[in-house]
Length: 244
Image (cartoon, rainbow, N blue to C red; front, top):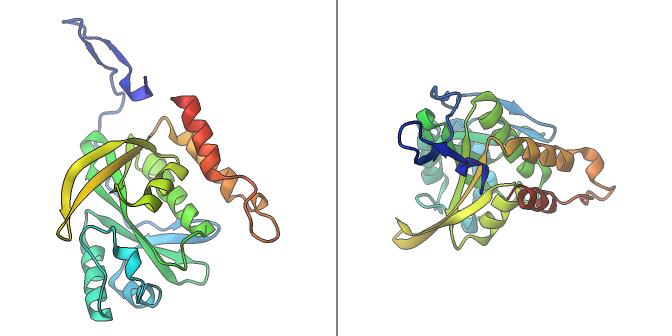
């Protein structure tokens, strides 16, 4: 049984119930922090990020196919309005992804924030072609997960995607999330049916996922041509099978 399914007899009825949670205080909500890494940083999304983001997203309609409510955008005006709306929201709470040249090349959000249960989701993961398959793309997920678990103290970190989005499903497993199932006819997205695939990572699983992230992100993990020596997907697959 997974760690979160452990139980004990209820003190009065003897029925199986979940184990007591030591800290039941609500978790803090995410805030306007700057999360710095070796390959870039995350910072609170601002309306003025739209100019740089449009440079890398213009004409990239395929990026928006599986985003439930936004895009693709016909022009900068439409795009900038969407970024301004996203930047002003408390949930989803959005961050811009900034490379070492100080260019905004992607964005990501924390959403469906439930402080009283210490549950939070990462979503609206919008990686431009300039960010896809880069170390910063992976480091973004490491920095955000570390913030969620270590600074904010959440117990459960979720990843959800269109069940037909094969790239997102692979990414969730690569980053160390565990597949939990598919919710059929979960929503209507842009006039189409969408089944949602659900993944999660627990606070008890984070230490092993953190080690794997850090091993992969270490500069020594790459040869002179930038090819990885250790696969993050393989490391997390091995770790998950040991814990199941």
